[in-house]
Length: 56
Image (cartoon, rainbow, N blue to C red; front, side):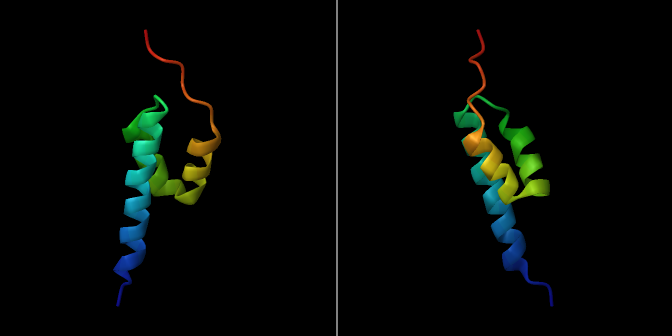
């Protein structure tokens, strides 16, 4: 049997990362996709990268 809890947790983390990225003026979609690949490493990067400059 396949353990679906692992996939559900990874997907939830990706959604959370997308929200974090948007709060820092970054692309939520891009970070969602990166989070699917990088998982917790993407969370670390989002938290410790400085916010993107505001668009004029």
